[in-house]
Structure formats: C-alpha cells, structure tokens
Length: 402
Image (tube, rainbow, N blue to C red):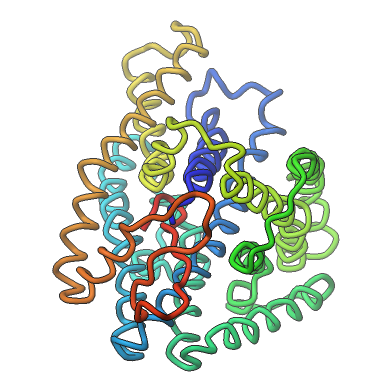
C-alpha cells in the first residue's frame, strides 16, 4: 500500500531542509539571531533516512518474492536499476544546470573536486555544485548494500544487512574515541544506523504490532527538539578542537542517531499506525508536496542562489523588505521544484523505466500500482502465487514514491 502519512512526512522533511537554506543567500537576511538556529531544519535529513529504511524493507521483501518467478539475478537487477533511475538522472540534470548558474551567481569559482566521484555519488567528497547531494551518497551506498545482500543471501538478505549494521555499530563505539580513517569514516558512518531504525519500524508494522499512544508523538517531537541542542554547531566546534575532526564528526553522527534518529523512528511508526488504524491522515497538500519532495530537495539551494543573485542585480536587496524577498524566494523555489516534478522527474521515471527494465518494468509497475485499504499492511501478491502470503508494498524514496 501507499502510506499517505509517509508521503506527508516527506514533504515535512523537505520543508525542514529548505528552511536551513533560506537565510544563506540574501545578505540583508543574514541576521545574527537566525544563524544559531538554521541547523535545526537539518533534522529533515534524519527523517528522510528513517523513511528510506522503512520503505526499503518492503522493497526487499518484494524483490525476494520476485526471485521465485524472475530468478535471483533479474530480481536484483530490477531492484538496482529502479534505484539508479530514481536517483541519478534528475541529479545529473541539477548538477549540469549548476555549472553555468554558479559561474554567473558566485563571485569566485567553487573549489575543484574530482568529477567522476561527484557524478557517481561516491564517497563523502564535498559537493560544491549540489550541496545537498551529500545525503544521496548515503542513500546510494545503502541501496548498494541492499542489492549486495539480495545477491549473496537471496531470501535471507536480512542476514547480510544485519552483518553490515553490526560492523557499523562496532565502528560507532570505536569512533567515539578513536579517529576512523578515510574512507572508513564514510563506509562505517553512524548515520547509516538511521536506515536500520527505519527497517526496524517496518518490521514491527509488518508483523502486526500497531499499539501506539498518541502521547508518544509528543514525546518524539520533544525528544527531537531537545536533541537539536546537543547537535548545535558550537558543540561540534569544541569537539573538533579538543579531539580532532574525525572524532568530532563521528560523535556528531552518533549523536544524530541518538538525539534525532530514534525520535524520528518513533514519529514515523506513530504516523503509520495512526493511518492503519484510520485515526489521522496527513492533509492532501502535504501528500502532494511529498510526491514532489525529491525535486524540491535537489533544486532548492540552486534556485535560492539564482534568485538571490537576481535580486541583488536588480537592486532590490536593501530596498525591498527582507521578509518580502524571502517569501518570494521560497515561493519560486517551491514552484520550480513542483515544475521539475511534473516536467522532468515523472517523465524520466516513466521513459527510463520502460527502456531499461523491459518485461520486468511492466510487471513491477503493475504490482506497485495496486493499493490496499488503509487498515491492512499487506498488498496484492505481486510476484507470488495467489495462495502464498503476500508481501507488503509501499511506494518509496527520499523524495517521492518509487
């Protein structure tokens, strides 16, 4: 089924990330009182990672079920190709668009980085062209490990994931005191445990555990609010001076999991249970924005930078009210993201899916288009015979349903 509350939370997470970058481009809006709080919107990234883990659990189950008919290699190919189509084409378009725009909008050229790793979303290199793409490197890495687990362990793919997450957990404990050298600081990053939290939530829901008191939602929000205090930039700067950058980053990411990832998982679990029990559904406008959240997420920094430069060249900065400029900038950013969703993202997914997944694409698309009633966590058996237990299905990704 398609969880409408998950769609709505994608929108909330994307808007939280957008809020981080509102005050960065217009000189007249860089007010001192906003600077210490701008990082709070980054909580949206933790929510995205938990959602991705939640969704990928169901996608794994669907791929495992598909092995019974398609075979192991075609099922894994279908999984991997769909993830590649989902992430890379739109990202490459944004990356390409950033080159002439940044040459026009920035006073100095961005630092040079190797091109291939940036285009392939490999490692943890700074991405001066698409600054938010650092999160996509974790997404792609997570997808790769899921595909590897499916290929090596087939129906027992969760065993492979458990081994991987156990290694990450051990590295988290070690990294609290000992520097973890590159590239292990990325390959064993504590942030990856937030995907595990999402998987855990999906397993609870899939096994029928739907007991949730509304008060826990308030606890999750309060936990998150308090957690942001322990993730403030000043604390990271102190750790960096005292312990070195690698330990400071490791502690910061471990803190993300404890202070933000766990409450995000509680929040996601509660919202899913509320929907399954038909208690509360996210407003339609948030569901719609959730569909377009991947486009909004990828484009908003570049659009903000372009609009801010246009305002400066038109002579509006310092003349027009900063509040008006901010509202206009955000409105343009969201509108451009929605336009990208309809004109670029959806057509790309449709066309590339048909060309790169012949045969498999039609079968999986039909399967994923079928939804069940909100009071059931299981969907139509896509790849299994009618008498077999059907796997749960939901739409997927950091930005919108897959």
